Length: 131
Image (tube, rainbow, N blue to C red; front, top):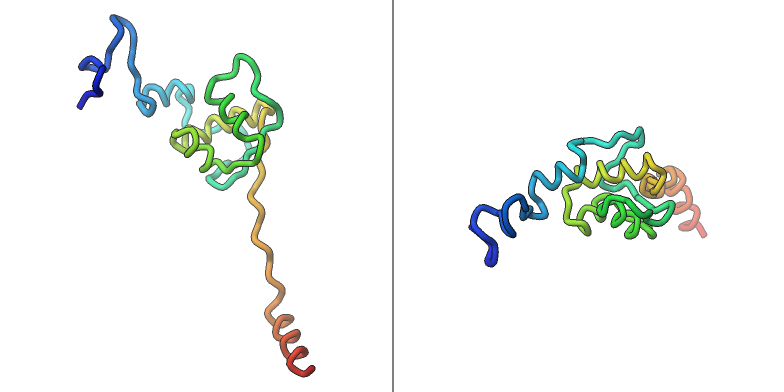
């Protein structure tokens, strides 16, 4: 199946020019430098919140710059992946690069509040009922 306006075989514009799809394996390989995991020691998962520590710098890879710009307010890795339309594994590598370079900060999501001990709640309820 070919896209309208594109020559068969995925090559357009003459010899040597490639018409890569946004999600082609070649493009993803180039974006990550062939790596499948981040180099940093910070564990990164879907709900890790990423926030920019500085603005995008000239010479940054376009995907790195996009992540830095969108993370002025904290975003989870899953949200970044959705906004960039890139697989989570690729975003994890890119965020790891930015963490190592100090362009972004990662933090665990806010943990759910711990409920007080059940015995304490029952004691409070009993005390209120006796009033």
